[in-house]
Amino acid sequence: MLDIIQKKRFIKSLKKYRANKAVLKELKLIIELLSNNRPIPRKYKDHELKGNLKGIRELHLKPDDLLLYLKIDGESITLLDIGSHASIFGM
Image (cartoon, rainbow, N blue to C red):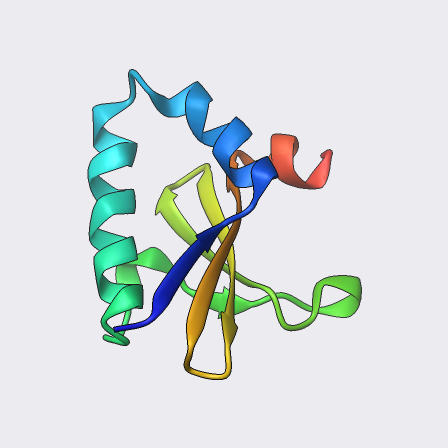
């Protein structure tokens, strides 16, 4: 089982989702899959980002609810941020 590390930005952003049970349910499932090194279903559109964010992975919990994370050497998963495209990327 991989260690799950939560960055401060992720924890702060997650507070905005306290009332959004649908996103929290998806997040719980994704964390379980990631921690057990299981494949992420295609519906989440998991992919590596490009450019300055190369190495960071993004997946869609819902169409405009994203999770950014790092997978480090098969030992740990670092949850970086959760939010909309606009809140994460400043669009």
